[in-house]
Image (cartoon, rainbow, N blue to C red; front, side, top):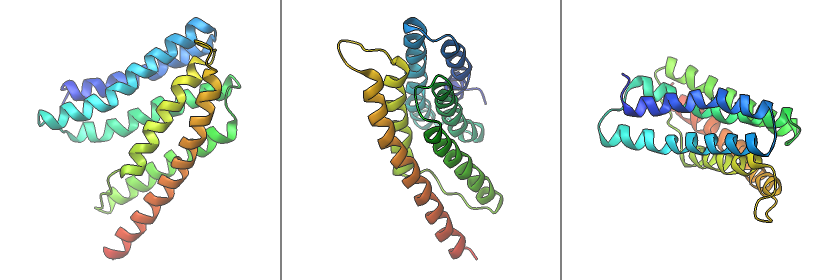
Length: 181
């Protein structure tokens, strides 16, 4: 149950409160540390799945915890960046509502015996959200680069993918429901 893959996923879950605490005291050092923790936690998203599949350690616990860890990490970071005034609240609301809606629909589908795995758009959405949050967490200019501006542009791309992938998930789930009636 607590194999290496699941341990990495748990590490991603425990990274969320560390980032929250660091962002509660925003300055160039704590923002950099929050970005570093976020980056390392985001890396575990790739490695936990890779390790689980490669070593044949895919577990039901891992299938449950992996998307939960992604949502906790990304949503808590978005909420804190909104609290700091670094991103607009409506962007955070759209992303968090999409995550809650898809998670709720996924739970209903599982209860009905249907499984609809994350597709390439959902995975791309998560990657783009992570790519956006890194520079937004850095916030301050580095090497003459406006990290906040870079993160904001990527966040709008991630926002589009968030809405698109959510709509695509609902469309695909509707198709599966119709074929199973």
